[in-house]
Image (cartoon, rainbow, N blue to C red):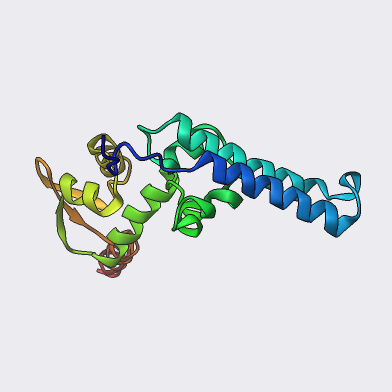
Length: 171
């Protein structure tokens, strides 16, 4: 039987055991005895070995997903995943951040006619959230017809209304 990319294990456990043993030996040599080795150094060596076991135990899952599922310390991801820095910094946007992204876009695109689908694309949000934003902010999104809205500037609209009111008071 030939070894293909699919049947070949992603991580060599025997190699990782050797790396762990050598790392612990180096730490003991560096600090004099096993009790003097800092906890964090021992823990990271053990965590790397644990990550290897997680990878082998879950061959069907992507490494990133396996590591997240088993709460593997992101400090050791770099030994197994090439873009560990990106993986560590990558996080999902909160609901408030997504809404703010849509509102910022609206402030930059005053006067544009927009559909809910466009708002979904801009904010990376669901249809229901786009609809909720439009319903909650009638000062920003004026309904033209079903599914089509005009992006407005509420501050400019208020100033225009004040100017009209002042003009009518003078007359």
